[in-house]
Image 1 (cartoon, rainbow, N blue to C red):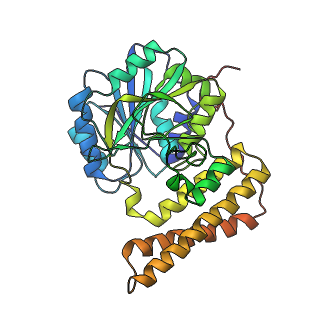
Image 2: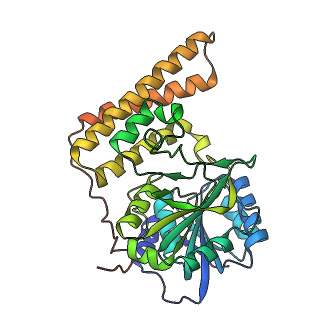
Image 3: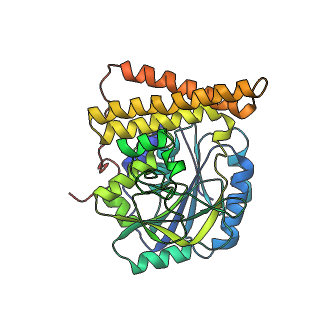
Length: 356
């Protein structure tokens, strides 16, 4: 087994500055970032080995300083997989970059650690990419533990679709692309079609497309990196396709369940990073205002729910905490006068060789 132990700065400097290796004799490289959630990781890797052992050429597991014994379990139970141990939690985007920088496959598959394979869902996607040279990345159907098809695509955030979501119009008018835009409530995910955003729970991309677009922007610690990546794929002329002919189970929230309020805030911080990177000042102010409206409405709803239930419910209390936390964040962010952070450029030329 190829195991790498490295301090945080060395891991970032080595992995993120090195272009993909030139050897393309291996076809599919799989990268899985893990952070605690040992039971989910075990199920993910066992099911991957069971159903896809003849498909992938290498599996790279990047551990973000788990404290629950996950990396030792991977080393013991899956010696054929490469294990990279980060000394600190570098975040989802940066850890994936470290894994991708070591890939030697013609195709790169990113899989969340709380995914369970129930079949070889990689080969049909490879066949689709082989037949569609204009497609740079595909994503399979996301299934819940009950087998129900879940949403796994988005449209790029805009002022209008963010406003529609804040008012719940995407719930009231589920089949309307006008009101259900950002979360694609108008799409049942039962047919293959081009999309703007593939959520990053499970994607298969051409290595050549990644070399053109660049790796994840490491400024996104968790969340948002998939929307930003999809935007950059689009800007580079690389088509994204949701592939409905195969799928896998995604439990979702295996790590975020440990701190739901914190992770909810991280989601909005990441969304704010996207708006600051790709949208103008006026749109950014609009986003903050819409976010305040969104959580103001939900805070009132949570407060009323708690009053109507003799002391409140656990869910109402959680929703109240999340909304109040987000409102405080909006107030702080709106009045903050610091300049925009120097987000990485779209092509990430420091990471990989890109076309001009």
